[in-house]
Image 1 (cartoon, rainbow, N blue to C red):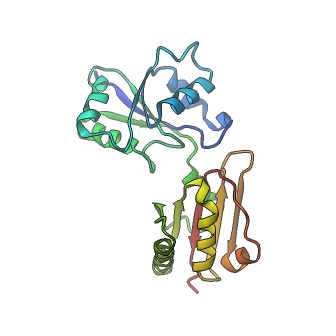
Image 2 (cartoon, one colour; image 1 turned 60 degrees about the vertical axis):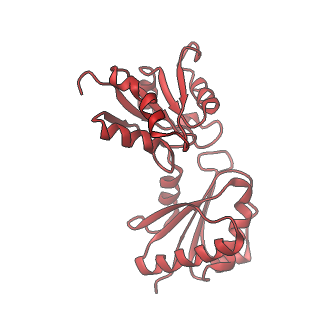
Image 3 (cartoon, rainbow, N blue to C red; image 1 turned 30 degrees about the vertical axis):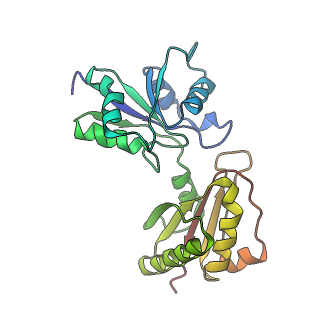
Length: 238
């Protein structure tokens, strides 16, 4: 792999105006990369510009990598690695490969004996788990729950049973404008002693992190804004 390029996994901010959360090591690596793959090209350009590392971002190559990218397209997008050129993967938010289509590129790199370099940066999933006080030894991230209310309620109850069985923290996310509907469903369908953590707009100016049992949330249910949130719960096993 001496003459091959390296695939860098570059973390991005998870809240507006939170560039200070990006470590200096990431900035150093970015200065050596001018070829990027991103889930959203416009967002990627705005992010790179905000870091003020370049005189101009116009010379940078930023190509689209999303959930609809085919294997054939992926091979083309990563071809510069074969030519000895480094490539940076940019997530829409947080760390590439974590609930993110960048995982496809990482899989391809391993299958083709390319070096993968993960860089340290903010991950809303890990930050929420760290701050929740829930079980960090046994946990599972489930992405998005079903949208339909009755299907969502059924899934919530299934995850609570799994939490009891495995003593496991359950994590999931929702589209911001549905935050309050999900909160309502959680309060209605979880057992009173189950502990629920809401981690809202992490690293942002309106950051809110609170863990309470469901009975306490019922007494004072917050109205959540339309910012990204992580929801975590752990059932009472006593």
